[in-house]
Structure formats: structure tokens, C-alpha cells
Length: 111
Length: 114
Image (cartoon, rainbow over all chains, first blue to last red; front, side, top):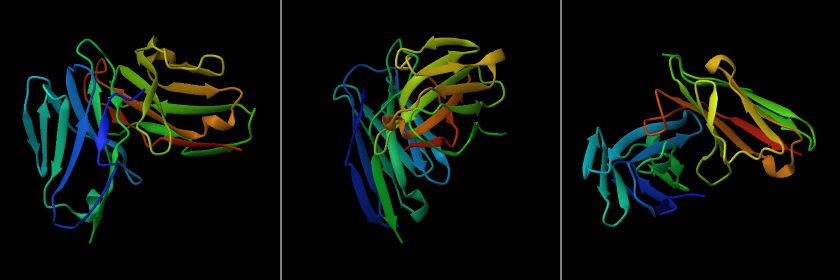
């Protein structure tokens, strides 16, 4: 079973534009993580945000977390063609020890 | 630092045949995971090892799937016999400890059952 649901399912933008992906989840969490998957590099960890944090940045990535709404968003600024990939959110329960992934958002960046 | 290594990358077999996948985690990572990923879906955990002990295998279909992690390093996932519905990508991942932290994934094995 999958905990998170990403929205939109697919997103197509022009290079240089910003891309925003959203993730909603159902139960309390210890942390939420975002991963990227493309055919070239497999599944790669992008960023982890803990339940007591509201925002984190990493390079061109900005992640927000709203535990009251059980939602998170991933913003990629100034997108590049190389950002074309599937993006997954994954949650860890408060006393759990495993990741539960959503179905992902497919991002296509056109050059 | 070498990443998680998996082999083979692709495997095509006929139904009812056995198949095995191999994974070598990042050196020093105590925790190893096997995931199943169907097309258009996120990975789903099959089994998690802490060193050589399987601590979470609740999602592993034990009638046909088996796994081992001898000496707490390499791991093998086996399916016998394979069914058409087993066609998917099998991912191996590892992490420093427990399942709360960042996980490092291998490239996966794409299995096609004919």
C-alpha cells in the first residue's frame, strides 16, 4: 500500500521555469523524503525533512512540510532538461523503520 | 565511494522458471532492503535486513519468494517459480542504520516473465 499521493501525476514545463510537486499523506510521520528516478541514475535521494521542520533548501530545491495538512511540496527552481525524471515522496512513521513511497510525479523539462 | 551494485540488470524468463537477483550494498551499510517497483508506481518494500537478520519480511510472498543475506553483506532474492505478475523492477537499497534515514538505491533488475 502507498502512503503518499503526488500531485500532479505528470508535469511538462519549459527549461528555466519553476516546477512544483505536491505530496499528501495519511498518517503521522517522523520524516518525509523526496527521491528522483531517471533511467540513467536510478533512484536518488534528494532531501529529507523532519516532522518538526517546516522548510528546507538544497541548491535549487525547496521543500516545505505542513503536518497539520499532512502535505509537502517540492519546488525546483530554474529547471533544466536534466531535471526530467520521476519524483517520489516517501514517508517514515513516527516509530517506524521503513519508507513508504507514493506513486510519483513525472516531470518533463523541455529545452 | 562505490554505490549499490545489482546484477543482472535485465532478465527475461519463462513462467514457472526460477530466477535470482544479487545485491552488494555500500560498504559499511548495515541495513539492506529489497523493493518491488511496478510500472508507474513507487517502490514497495519486500524485505529489510539489519546485518544478516530479516527484521521486516511482512510483504514478502513467502510461497515463492525467498531472500538471504549471508555474513551481513551481499544479498540474494529468489523467485521460484516465477509468474507473469512478477514482471517488475527489483530494487536493492542500503543505509547506515534503520529505515529512517536516507537510502541509497542500486540501478535495479528489470524482470520480464513470459
